[in-house]
Amino acid sequence: MTSETDPTKKADKPPEGSSTWRLILDVARDEVCERGIDGVSIRNIARLAGIDPRLVRHYFGSKERLLRAAVQVEGEPRQAAQQLLGGSPRTIGRRTANLLLDHWDDPRTAMPYRARLAASLTNDDIAGLMRDEFISVFFEALAEEYSPDAPKLRAVLAATEVIGIAICRYLVEEPTITECDRAELARVLGRAIQHHLTAELSPALRRRAARAGSR
Image: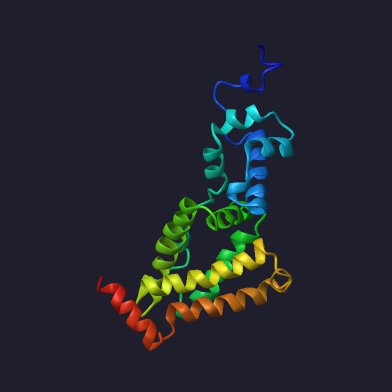
């Protein structure tokens, strides 16, 4: 069979970054956000992209590898945290909110973040990736620097606030949040992050943090 009739014979090694490679990823991310990771199929991705299903396997090998690539976000969480360290403790909440909203709203980086968020709701592996990178690395780095105590607990509390806003704004698309002014949303989210990272914990939360620390 010649390369004109077999789409898998286009290259010995599929080139990452090609227009077809990017198209497949874009469609896969849209599908993950729309259907969840368990509702995605190579056949449907190929249909929506207008290509032969063999091309999807040619570029990514398997559905699992494709979905892993679809939820891969740009940059390292520790490097993102490093951008926020060293500033005033009194503005860490606002600076964090602005950084995250910049990534989520930028057309170049938005879809991988949204696809990962959607996938984490139904897939244990992706949920574990979210916990490891977003909570244990990103927010714990901030809490270790700025929180007076219980950094692990405070990282979880701050991340919970952020994830809730992200789900409502980008997946559920609740109008009150999606239509909210960007600057106002940064102020509201920033205050919540600031509180969780730096405010005094309630007695019940201090006891919980103490018990977790003694294990």
